[in-house]
Image 1 (cartoon, one colour):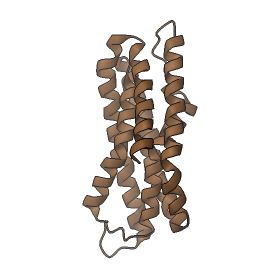
Image 2 (cartoon, rainbow, N blue to C red):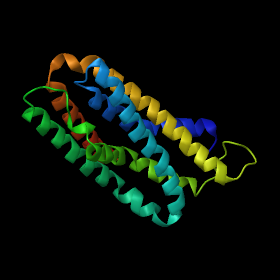
Image 3 (cartoon, rainbow, N blue to C red):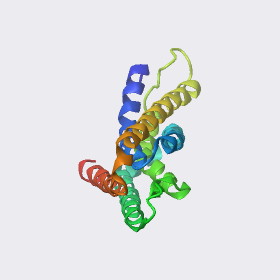
Image 4 (cartoon, rainbow, N blue to C red):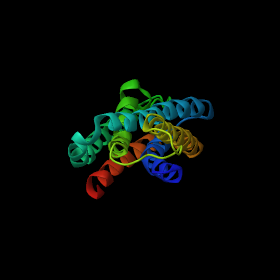
Amino acid sequence: MNIIEIVAAALGLAMDALAVSICCGLGNDKKQTVRTGLTCGIWFGGFQMLMPLLGYLIGTGFVDLIGRFSHIIAFVLLLLTGCNMIREALQEDDNSGKTATKGIRAMFILALATSIDALAVGVTFSCIKVDIFHDVSEVINVPAASLIIGIISFVMSFAGVKIGGTFGHRFGKWPDVAGGIILLLLGLKILIFH
């Protein structure tokens, strides 16, 4: 894989994180949006960077298992998080903007759910030649590719929160409900079209 293919893969991997980040930005005011954007960017970008490295280290031994169950794991994680987000939005009386997506546990689950595909990409790194820097070993190329994936995911996640924050704060708790529904639909899409 060359640099262009890595960037294309990174953009594809970041799409789920972008969609979830838009949901995280819904209902935020401008001050919260920056903080939430950084939080989402760090969580999603960090996981998108670490999972290919982990996949590379795991190697080809688990490629069938990861490919066979990744969509089910992602579906369950997004289903649980989406239902929790809807439940908390409907129980929230003060409309303070606190959503299920801001807690550490919820962010961990979302980051894990949106980065399972990156784990599979990392396994592929152990099967093919990663060639960002020509005539350099994979000890440098694989971490460089993972860093590119993480940076692109960080930027897209931050932008997603800004997009969600721009439109969501005008509608009270209903953007959080819509965000939960979007997470449910995203999980269904992953399950059906894997």
